[in-house]
Image 1: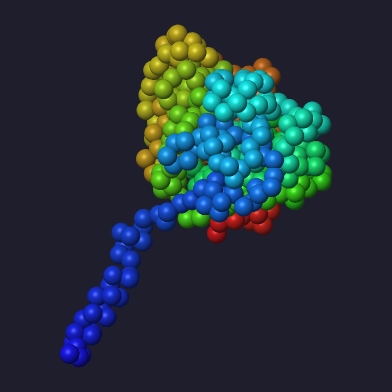
Image 2 (image 1 turned 90 degrees about the horizontal axis):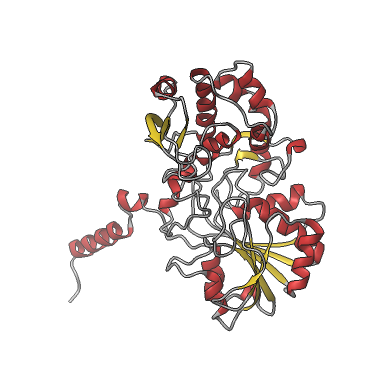
Length: 411
């Protein structure tokens, strides 16, 4: 029996409605696949016929929280020969400024080589000694210039080029989005392991995008580079949109919320105040002996977008002021879409210096290494306010943003 015209129209309308996403569905993130997930889905074709080594740490996991080294070692399609551990080590047993050294991994029997603070020819010699053809990189970054894993990436790319090795980067999300670069750009004379090259303090890029930029802009000779991009990631996504489990990339980066403030509040490493190491809220709790409610009040008077400050007291279990009760602030981000971590970090430095007579920079001027020049320190010492300090890097940041656009993989 032939259907009526009304039935056809009704059926067509129902089909159109079911095919059109609702507003709620449109807001839900697409299913994200990391670079590793896409590599594995393709049967590791990119590594076919290669003796493989991988630079990774505890963040190199699947969404089922299996480590990718264990997964690849058990898969006959991959000839995995070596692991290279960064700061804190491959399995993550070392604190800040430490590594695990050379050992054989008990779980897989694979040799684990230590890359921490190694670069150039010595690191190239490690790649050569390992016998690999291709070096793979898969580590979760947090989006800040002074977080050392991106410079492990840079050093390993340079060393792979010197050793004649192919280099593959498996991408993961920038947990604080990739919307924009923020903060001062490193000046070359201040280059260290917390900043090898002139990029912004909050770079707004993924590791694969940074690898592309490093290869074209900063390496003397480019490495044979291949990147495996994610699918389903948007530049506006925070980490919770990824659907991926969070593994602390380092002992003092316990949550994505820590990463959200880190590119600003890590600047307190360059002062005599605690940056919250030794507490359950590192980089969210800041303080020192002699600080009281006046700091939170001064910071709140600035009405910085997306953030408020609470008077707080805490006793770090290690690092600065170990075992002593100190006063300060806790940073509470209430609107992450408008929150600017670098501006907030500068504002907290300015107000801490204003309300606490004991404020001092570290004697080694570590703050200059973190900010990338002496400008922030000297401007604050001269009495500059937050707006004046931020204006000081406007032109160099604009230039970096223009360069950065060329290497973005996600639009």
